[in-house]
Image (cartoon, rainbow, N blue to C red; front, side, top):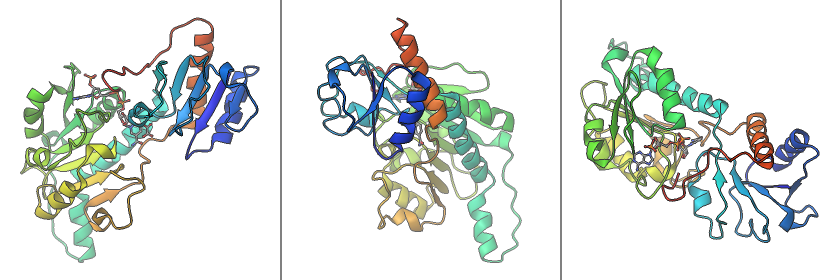
Amino acid sequence: MLLLHLSDVNEASWARQFAEALAPYPVVRRGDDFDPSRVRYIFAWKPKADAFEGLDGLEAILSLGAGVDALLKHPHLPAQPIVRFVDADLSQRMSDYVVAHVTMHHRNFSRFQADQQARRWQQYYPPAASQTTVGIMGMGVLGQDAVQRLKPLGFELRSWSRTTKSIEGVTGFAGPEQFDDFLAGTDILVNLLPLTPQTSGILNAQTFGKLRRGRLAGGPVIINAARGGHQREADIVTALADGTLGAASLDVFEVEPLPQDSPLWAIQNCYITPHIAAISNEAAGVRYFSAIIRDHEAGKPLINVVDRARGY
Ligand code: NDP
Ligand code: OXD
């Protein structure tokens, strides 16, 4: 039996699609009349404290999100394997966001928008893409997709990950010891890391001060599409005000929804989106997790299982 436990998304609609895809396999929701000990899979997003109560026959926890930081903090998380969402549709959506914001900042959107508002005709030529370096933190599923889509646009590309990566056309850096070198050649910093104790707060004043200056008018840029816990928002506000950063694109925030009184709302060169960079698409998600359940029921191993010791 598959149990759905989803908050802040249309659980009824997901349940209908799962029931269709898996029929005659039983699919239930909270509030339905079922025996919890018959649940073999739970499909979860922002599960409540009692989500796993009575699930004595559980085989796996299926995460609607690609990021599992919140799930890993659940106070009663069972020991069963966690399978996270990994999907071409999700990667494409994230890369759409990354490419849109990288190209916007490369072409100095903030500066020309300000000029337009001031009715100012002031010619300025942004550097060529080949003279602009995009540095991506996190070279996993999403980071690797993003570099493949940025490559044809002609940017210099570099990556930073936990373990060394060798990707054609991308200069790889790894580990804390190579972090400063990675930053020193980066004009546009993109964050696609998972949130772990090691990466929490990594987008801070110290990091911003180490980015390359002199290529992009106004200063280097950050783009955070991973988790709000990666960023120190007070540092971003200061860095945008004093010119340490030329602009920022933020899809995620320390507190979501972003509080009304956050100073970020009013900063012209801070581009805010409400955690929509890459939503888990229903049709793609049902296809992916139905296949995982079917395969596992047929005796095949689970895929894309989270390594709890690493935290992602
Ligand atoms: P992956 O697990 O596939 O990749 C994670 C990458 O981060 C790996 O390259 C890993 O290194 C690297 N990494 C992890 N810890 C460290 C560290 N301490 N130092 C340096 N590098 C590190 O994740 P995904 O690409 O699938 O997703 C990334 C994140 O994107 C998710 O965790 C989620 O938070 C976020 N996300 C946001 C969405 C949105 O809408 N805003 C939507 C979907 C995801 P290594 O390769 O060496 O293991
Ligand atoms: C995710 C997200 O992790 O939507 O998938 O943030």
